[in-house]
Every structure is written in C-alpha cells, then in structure tokens.
Image (cartoon, rainbow, N blue to C red):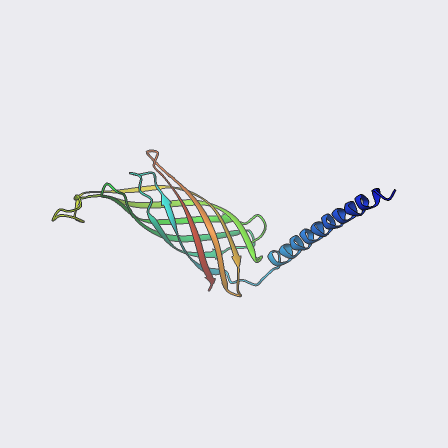
Length: 199
C-alpha cells in the first residue's frame, strides 16, 4: 500500500490541474461572451476606412487597396453601405494596374448588429474602372512613361464577409473579405483591415 500512495497522489494532482484548466477556460469564454454580447447604443451612420491587398488575377499584379465606406443601419439585421475603392500596383515587367471602384451593398447580421461585435454577410453591385499600362524598360530616357494603356469598365456582383468590433465608445476595428465577379470571367478578390467611427 505504501508504494501506491505516491501514484494516487500524483493522479489527484493531475486531475486537479485539469479541473483548474477547465475552470479557467470556462471563465475566459464567459468573459468573452459577456464582453462581445453586451448591447451598446450606436448611431445609424458610421464611416469606415480600410487598407489591404487586391488580387485581380491580371498580369501577376497585386495592387495596394484603399477603401472609404459609409454605412447606414436600417434595423438590427440589415445595413446598407456605399464604398469607393482605389488601388495601384506594378510588376517586374514594367506593367501597372490601377483602378477606381464603386460598391453598393446590403448586409445581413445574423447575430444582430447592435452588439459590441458584429459578423455580417453582404452582396451588391460593383462598378470597376480599370486601367492597365506598359511602361518603357528601365534605364532608358523613357523610363516611367507608359507606352501602352488600356481602360476597361465592368459592372458586376459583390460577395462580402466582414467582422467589426467596437473598441471604444465610437471607434471600431475589423477586417473584410471581398469577392467580385464580372462578365467575360473577370474577377477580383481582396482582403482589408478596417478602422471606423460612429458619426
């Protein structure tokens, strides 16, 4: 019996450690839920800016993307947004791509949008004004001068997933995943980090 006592004591310590970990995990989840599910008063209007990368799949160019977006909350489930995106990028073959884009979307928040954290899904229309250019080779007197330029306009559909969290009384942070599809099998994907404030 004397040899079995240390083993049983060791098992008791292991079980106690597991119980403490389970309790800490439960308390953490409870704290997280209480902080994210707390209802906060918000204005119907907010302004959000974003920065990220665009993936249009054209000439291996990944443009830097900037976004300005205004949102209007219709009710606790629906929100509309109007956004203006600008982007510019260049590859190693002296080809550049830039665009101006307007997006009108309707969002649904399945867990309500008046909580401190909001997950929303959206879709809508997109207008894409795209400019591609080919520049002269480096080292020549014509460097940085476009020798070929093409402009395209597309109208397509958006699909958006966005998460935002209120960090202060009127400030918010979040991220956005964006997919866009146009005719002639043209598409664009983007990811952005966002910051905003309630108007």
